[in-house]
Length: 200
Image (cartoon, rainbow, N blue to C red):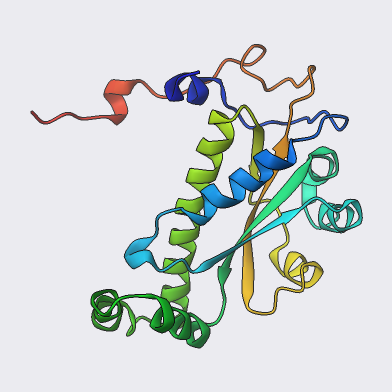
């Protein structure tokens, strides 16, 4: 399957088949893929938590508003979190980044107010989310990104002392009766000419 076909066929899954599981090797591959995600100056201000434990998923489901059933029925819930401590982030990049990247941070980002800097962390984490969703589509895994979660409760359940949950992604395989799959609800996107401009 070509990448274009994978993207044409992917959709936000509304109902998962709770009886189907993802091959553990594919889960490990997804972990490596998301680890390799790009970020500005290779900052990597994130953490990805793969939750397969039934009891933990059940607790997270209760903190997922109208997404509760998706969390319960999916094979794995992946929580995308950004680092929540600026001093910890600075210690991390000092240990891992080359001088030129550190110089960029010191010159352009370090002076940001904490709220603005954390928003920048959020943006990097969403880059990883895009990579992850595309990878799932290419691997034939169905996925549902969910901002409809209660982050503080997620943090407590996951014992996330230094990271803050932004979005959960339920992954697994669609139920055959899912009303939102493209065969029942065709994908709707704006016309190519409305969103893409080419300058030759």
